Length: 92
Image 1 (spheres, rainbow, N blue to C red):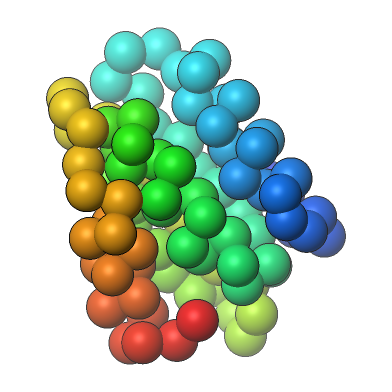
Image 2 (cartoon, rainbow, N blue to C red; image 1 turned 90 degrees about the horizontal axis):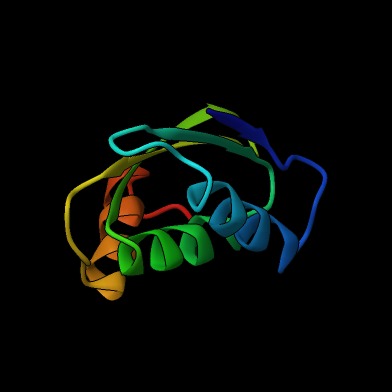
């Protein structure tokens, strides 16, 4: 499933992502497109609480693709955010 929240600001990117996660079939991934920097921490935080790991890539300056994959269990939200920042080279 793909969710495009570009142009939206907090809390809507995170809220729409949580809503989409609830609609996924078991094992399905969610791709989220965003241009709102705070979403790089709010989305991974909420995804981790729901058992999704997040991979992130910069599409272009100020725009990112987050891939949320089910892990089968709840993750540490703080570590999930740290991992996203690591993937981005510390950019927030």
